[in-house]
Every structure is written in structure tokens, then in C-alpha cells.
Length: 410
Image (cartoon, rainbow, N blue to C red; front, side, top):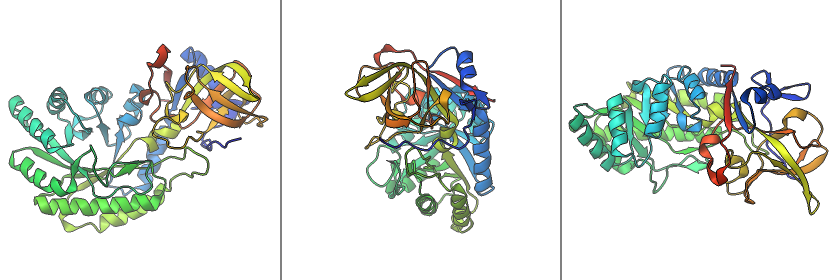
């Protein structure tokens, strides 16, 4: 038997039926019309942002990274709760603008921006986080052609990474950002060319659960921003410190102590070099804000035994929830939190593997976990499904229909 991650304490039940947003999952499935179904809890999203604001320095801006969950009702809700939206494509940019995000508080990051994406961002007044000097040159030419001064920030590839992060975004050769040894010269050139320089974006890594490592990276980021400001002889209007806040998916992991991070960040900002005295600061979070607020519901359509092992075959799978299957950047496969949603809280009496409907052995959502006795028609709940779920999974694989999505309590 293999352990699975801990179910967030926010989730409760009524008559053994899982509640999401205060509503029974059987009622939610009936309203949606089918499974598989992603359900996102608006109350949990609001509470998450409120807790973050209370923990962080009062003047720190909070940005939502749309790539974590681009479901339009979620983006619309988040746009009203945070100070800015960060996007990674023209498609996300149009979604964010349509959801009420303010262009002047929006940034567009990501390598490989096509000219038409730069055109769209410049016309909209969105800040472009430049990933290379060449991208900066193209943005300047496009801005001159359009007669619009482009709003440009420099994404920096720092010489350090976020210790213990799940995905390291700095500390060596990377497709992201401009190496910190070259960023100062680029900033001087952008300003000389007449660009509206909006500051720095420095992102060292993601999915970290060590508050000391995050605080250490934030302090190093502030120091790097000061050094680049000296080299460029220009004060960055905004320094985006990135994010990296993780959530506890797997057995043995514990929730991140963001209050401790807030205390240390306040000290870092209070003691920042004088050249950054007039700079504003922001953090950019996605997973930490929305990850725990989502549940993926998939119905058991077959129960079978093979070589003494029980398999619960569902109507969902990795084409909707790739990360839970262990195929989204995970080196060693471990189990996400899982439960039988209509037997929530019932004692575990058997060991079973939850698999999807795809014709591949990779389609395994939970491996040899302890569950209540389950039958066809029961509903499996996969937790921690609010981030990098539907949009980060190969929905077209094998031609099965996409999962439904729903925001409750908005």
C-alpha cells in the first residue's frame, strides 16, 4: 500500500457526501450534467488572497499568474482580488483583459513571443517582460511603426536559483530572461531608445515548500535588482520578485509558512539599498493561490481485479489531470490526495489503484492507495486540482471529451 497526500482541511462532508463551496458534489455533478468535472471554490480563493495580504508587507502588490488556472470565471474573480495579472501568451492576455484585468497592471512573459503578440500587447498597453535582447529590438521597431511607446520590463535570468524548488528557473543557462551579467546594458539601451521601462521581473523557481529558501531567494533578488539599477543608472519602477510558493501535494509535505516569509520579506524591503527606495515591489503567484481550491471529480465506470490487484477505472484520466498521473515534471511518481467523494470519511478497507479511460499504462491517477469499498457509479475526488489541471493536460489525446469546469460560490 502506498500513501497519498493529505486532503486540505477546508473540505468537509454532509452525509458522507463531499462538499465543495458548501454544496454536495452530487448536486454539482447534476448541475454540470456529467463527469469528469473540475470544481473550484470561490470562497477558498477569496480566503487565500486575504491570508496572503495579511501575511505580506502592506505595500507589496500581489499578482495572479493566469497560466495556473485560466478558466474564465476564475480569472474574472481573481482580477477583482489582486493587484495585477501576469500572462504568458496573447491568448491569455485577451482572456485577462476580457475578464476585467487592467492593461496597465498586466505583464506578458514567456519566450518566443511572435511579432503579432508584441503588436497586440503594445496596442493594449500591457507591459512586455522581455526574454532576450532580440525581443527588445523587435518591440522597439514595432512600437515605432505603431507610433506607440512600448511598455517594457526586463526579465532577468539570475545567477542563483530557488533552493529546493520543483522547477528551477534561474542559476544557469535558461531559455527564460536575460542573463544578469547582460541585463544592465540592455536596460540602458532600452531607455536610450525611448522605451517606457517598467522595471524588472526576476523569477528563480517554483513549487518550493521551504520558507527559508524562499526568503533567501527574495533577499538575493532585491540585492540583484539594486545591482542592476546601479549598472543601468536607472531606478526600476517595479521589481517583480516572482513567486515559487508551493503547496503540499504529496505524503510528508507540510503547508508553507507564508507568515514567516512575510516577516522576512518586510525586513528585506525595509533594509533595501537606497537606489531602490522609490521602487514598488510585487510577487507573482499562481499555484499557491488556486491549487487547493480545486477538486477533480471522475466517476468509476468499471471495477476489476488483475493478478490480485484492484483497479477502479474512471471516466477521467491524465488527459484532464496530467500532474496527478505523475507525468508533469515529476521524477518519482507519488500520490495526490484522493478520496471517494460519495463515501467521504468512510474507513479505508481495501487497496486499489485509480486509473483513467485512456489506452496507456501512464494513465494512473492513484497507485495502490487505501480507500473505502468502491463500486461502479461512485465518484473519485482528486484534490489539489485548482492549478495546472485542465489547461495543462493533453485534452485531445485519444479523442475523449474535455472535462467540464465550474466555479461555485462566486
